[in-house]
Image (tube, rainbow, N blue to C red; front, side):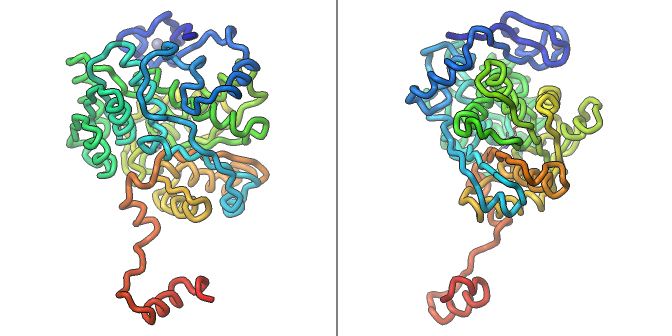
Length: 415
Ligand SMILES: *Cc1c(COP(=O)(O)O)cnc(C)c1O
Ligand SMILES: [Zn+2]
């Protein structure tokens, strides 16, 4: 049963019984939040029914999703990503317990698949002929992949700087790819104009309130996996602010229906070179647009569209926000890979970098437990991977030369 009850404006709190055609609040232009008929959902039954549900994808949470039951869905299997208890990682950053939720193993290799799957389902429901979005890269490739799985044409706008791995994905999924000579902001503005002019289905997370609905399923999975040992903190990187809002909404809804006894605090992490939301969080002032200057391309968002939702989410959770440098992000890529075997893209590990810093600075106590969501796969941006970890040893095929190199570079592997 589709239990969507209303749409509430996060800025002026106006309520609407249906989604306005603009997707945003007709009164003030604010972003909307999907509200369900929570009273009609029995938390205990919700959890119980999941135990018997063989579907490991996000559609197992249909009762708390805006899609029509039994409707058309993209064919890719989105969600059901692994969560690892990472003892050596915990030890290295000085925490009692750390979990890593690897969302880089989604079909197009990022958490964005959760939102794009919902977007494509909603586009099919609406009978749309084309879907479109602007994106720093991952929303783009996931939108294109989910659309390709059902033969829905996609028009994608990306900033010029998008890493080549993401561009390759887009082209392979046969999307119409418009690389906008300018920033993400420029790509977003052009997409908004084109979407309005041509009537395409609008997947822009910054506007479409359903995207948060897809993203919240990552928290449903964390709750299902960890049950009563839900961590004290959940850590996620922040660009537009839609992901962190989704992560919090997932926990809050399960708490509201009585499915979990308490909620974790959220640590939202931005890059120092692109941190308008965390500045707004700290100062309490409205968000001011800023730079897009970081290697973490997926969170290089100079003018985030969801700052209110994001700041509210972190605040309501009792959490906080923190910024990390590019050096810390590179270091977190190495740390994660070395201790867990998980390869995250820069934005994918920015959360972990923030967690390490928060522990160092005493913002998070070393007795706490935390779950770091790795939001994107490192193979999307291999240049930065190599930059983080260095080039391999290159030698002619000669055992003497090999031994000399090993003695120098990795003596511990010699007997
Ligand atoms: C999009 C993205 C984020 C941040 O999500 P926002 O909704 O933009 O805040 C973080 N990491 C990765 C890998 C992403 O693709
Ligand atoms: Zn409003």
